[in-house]
Image 1 (cartoon, rainbow, N blue to C red):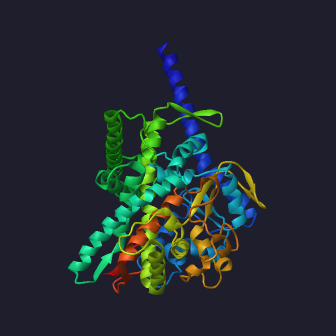
Image 2: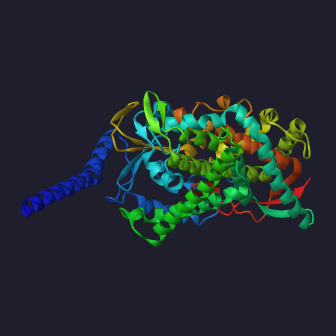
Image 3: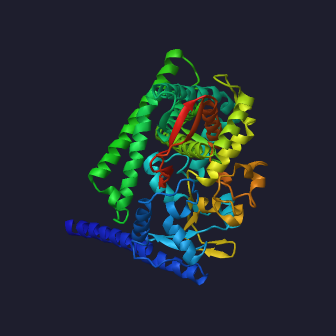
Length: 523
């Protein structure tokens, strides 16, 4: 009997090994060769690549060499600096080409009609490639889920960002921004009326404070642990990208991987403290509602074991709640802080526009510490133009990636299953054929008649994506950015410091490598 049992187990083991080997052969050999053959036949080509490694080594080498350089202050033609490998390939192979990220074929799609076809329907792609990186930071939240699970997350989160809810958040945003401004006032006094200030650090802090208050009902002190852990996790995850060429590296018990795991545990612990504080408050006050903010809506959902979504049932439990908290702590402060930092740099460089924006703010919202509201923010046309131009020149998220899950016809192209579609948002925002010869200049007036009339195509300007998966926090981000800038413009005048080094680079989002140094003085 034992020989028969041993033989059976050995057979099962061998079958499992064969299955794994066949899967690896398909992923590493058969699928890449098929994709290359289909795309080359249609004239879509790219640089030669190493087997398994693809173009990663060459890409990293070129990027690292460019990252050592600074750009000339006032030069906003940043494409070849922040994405040098892509810019080089565009010159050699045209706007539509392909390269290999390891064994994954990446097809660059710059045709706006093709992008619209993908994002509007979005039935044959998945964000799986991005999710492998983003899930390290956010877990399986709204950004990284698909299908019915994503529909449920969206259904639960959407009400927290309705217009009326956003209006109620403006006083909280003003309070956080005013607290930051008070700190700046003290620094200006200590500096004798003018002080050099690095603003990116403050922008990150104030946006983290706002997201903690408005979305989770906690003070910044309670949310600071999550904020600090998220930044640490981002840095650690980016460090691990250096080892992306080593298959299965993220599963090895290396010091870096252990540190990432411990940081994730720290994030979960901090979030549990915030969540338990809300639950305790509800129990003590015998209130039947968890509240109408994002955390309250998600806590209500966790009390319902499943949710109906288009005829199916999807579970939304404590883990899903935790992952969405991570998502909005990261997305809520990271992208808006980056937008505000670049906007401060642009206004400090173009003081005429700064003065015009200040005049509009004082005219609409009053001067000094006069309270303002959402209706006033909606009337700030010039400030909206400036923010849109900052988003065009320096989009926090420079691209969008979708993995093709089935063979599909995209325009005249046959796109094979297993390939990755890459949409170059930064390149589109800097394309002179779409924006004119002044594309690399700071010209907020191009948005004077709204976004629709500023461009030649509805998808030319898409900082918050497009289609069913457009950013749910778009309204929140713009209200937040306006609120902070209103407080700053009413109380300070600033210009770019001579010590500022212009070096845009990508680290999760598009950031200034050395921050933004301004000379700040009180009005």
